[in-house]
Structure formats: structure tokens, C-alpha cells
Image (cartoon, rainbow, N blue to C red; front, side, top):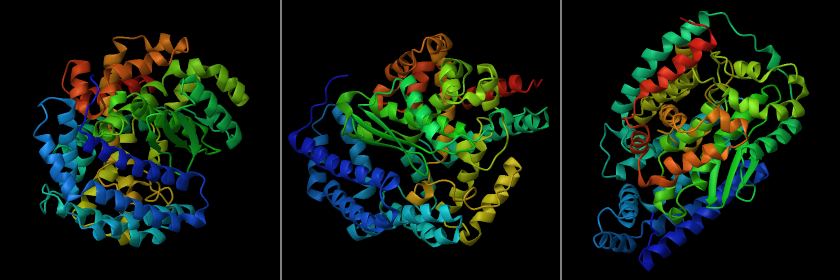
Length: 500
């Protein structure tokens, strides 16, 4: 790809916004990892001020007029024109929002995350209930300033914001395939002979898990000069620059597998940012990648690599060295145990087969949030009822129920469906990759870069210059098809549970 060449005023605009974003991301990571809890609300206030200033710069009417005039001078089809087009689409959604309305929203969002952390720690939804409803209503109300908004499409606008070209019709059809193809399989698995998982249900202290995480990062050939791993309540990835990506995990003594898979998952996000065409850094071509696209990369590494037998065979010496408790298990036995399907309460610990139903539950609740029909007083019961309906389990705590995810505390309505969509994208990408490289052979050699190089060359270097639907079709030679995902799961779990 050719180097981007912008007018001086636009490059200065990008640099200034980038400086604000770096400051905000640094504060956000600090607050969610090592910052003292009592300082949270003061930091929230400072972040809301900085966010408001960045918002004013981004939406300055004189600057917007210059950008629109500049757009008319750019060659159609050029990357510069593509950058400006994405920028103007983003501006159209925000330029009419009053500054005081935006600042109140940011302050509420920052406080909401702080209160969510406390509520989850205390296992008490009532602490979070009021600010959650306030935040969600503010998020919906912000849409009214967008030319795309009309009374009946609030959720469509949000879905499209997180993954371009999606709406409720798209996801309704997508989840219809998920339900039709996977719910009967889940019931078959539940009725099959169950696999005893007690051999890996061993308590492992956080220190040893953290030491193994370092080995895991080394095996994935993560550059310690560009990627930093730390811990938080809910794992996330943040991009502070082209050579500074922060990923987090969480160590649970009784479920050591959780931290391993979450680390692999977050490194998938990190790779996308690290392997984008370097000329895109600081532009919308790097910053506006769809969430479905991003989740395709994290779910790709987590599931198709991190749950594979080849991965665990390659890591086996390190596993036994770090966790002698597993020395009597073969790599094949470990792989079988980590792929067991058991309906559970927590999304981030869910197996591949039941995972999309965790997302379906959130999707159905978000529809009610978006049209303001959700009864927030009874949200924990609504959540529990849906878990019982779809997965046959019922949470008896808020922490493992409605408070388990941080997304709603950040006002992120419309993000959750992209996890399932990203999983489906990943299945089609993996099918294409497996035709070109022998994944098992490369992992056995410890050549993790064979996988990451393929992802870079075929997917990640495009950034937002192509949609994931376009990339999937180009790489696989066929349009996106969710049945490739469901067939992959049917094949995997039919073999695992010896189903006909």
C-alpha cells in the first residue's frame, strides 16, 4: 500500500486527536489495572474534561468545513479519500451533539465503570442499577443527533456503528442459523456420555499462572518491546500507539484455563493493531476497524489455535514444567478436556459450542435496552430466565449473572453480537488458512509466526480499508456463510462426543 499523504491541516488534526487519545487510553489502562480505587472518581472527572476537549476539536465547525472541502479535492478510490469518507461519516453522527450533553454522557460512562467494578466485587446489582439505566438512556438519546436516526432504528444505528453493514435484520437471520443448527446439537451433547473434567479441576495459585503466561507470550512470539501484559477484573486490550499495545488477563485459582485462553484471545486483538499497514496509524483506517472484524482475530487465536491439539502439544513441555499436576495427562487428553461442552453461567469461560447462546441472550436484552422497554428493576431475573431457557442453567449471584461483563458499564450497546459474528468470520478464515499452511506442523516446530504472518498478509494489514465481509470473501473465494461456522462446531463436537 502507498504511503498516505494528507494536507498539513488534516495531519495536524490527526496528531492532536491522537495525543488526546493517548492520554485517555493511558489513564484508562492505569485506572483498570494498578491505580488505587479511591482515586477513581477524580480520574473520571479529569478524563471527562479531556474527552470533552477532544470532542470539541474533532467537531469544530470550521475544521469540519475544511475537511468537507478537502474531500472534494481527493481522488476517488484513493486511501486518502477513504480515510476522509470514514471520518466524515463519524463526524455526521457527532457534530450536532451539544458539548454539555456529551460531557455529561462521558462523566456518567466513566463513573458507571467504576460503580460496576464495585457492584461486581460486592455481588450487588442494586448498586449498579440506576447508573446503568441512566447511561443506556443517554447513549440512546445521543443517537437523536445523528442523521441516521429515526425512532424505530436506534439499535440498527448502534449495530452498524460496531460493525458496518449490520442491523437487526442481519443479526436476526444470523442468530436464526445459530439456533437452528446448534441448539439441537447442544441437547445431543448434554444427553451423550459426559467427559470427566476432574483431572484439570485443580487449584493453581496466581503466581504460577502468571509465570506460565510469560511463557505463553514467548511461545506466541509476542514482542515484549511492543506488547505489555497485566491483570484486571475483566480482560481487555487497548492501543496506545503502533508500538504500544496493552493486554490484560485475570487469574482464577480454580480455573487456570481461563487466563490462558483470555491471554490468547487478547493477543489476537493486539496482533490486529500491531500488524496493520504502518501508514494507517493515527487514522480512521486503524481506529475504526469493526468490532466483528476485531473479534474475528481474537476468536481465531483463542478457538482455532488456542483450543487445538497442535497448540497443546507444542506447549506441553512448558505446561508440565509449570504445572507438574498435569504430568500424567497426555497433550491429547488435555485438549479433549479443555474442549468439553458444559452449559455454564459465564460467557468468558464458555466452551465454543455454547458460547454463541451467551451472545444471543445479550442480543435479545439489548433490543429491549435500545427501544427503552427493558425493566431494569428486574434485569437480573430477565437475564436468569433467558439463561435457563437457552442453556438450562440459572445464576444465583449477580456477579456470575448480569454483572459478569463490563461492556454495558461503558455504554457499549451493540458490541456483544460481534463476538458471535467474529467467531463465524474466524471459522471461514481458518478454513481458508488451513488450505495454505499446515498449522499442526508449524506449531510443532514452534513457528507461531507462520500463523500470524498469514493473518497479517491476508487480513490484518488492510485495517479498516476493507470490511471483514470483503476480506472473508476474497480469502475464502466465497461469500460469508454462517453455516461454515455451525458445520465446524457440529463436526468438532460430534467427534468429541462420538455422536452420529
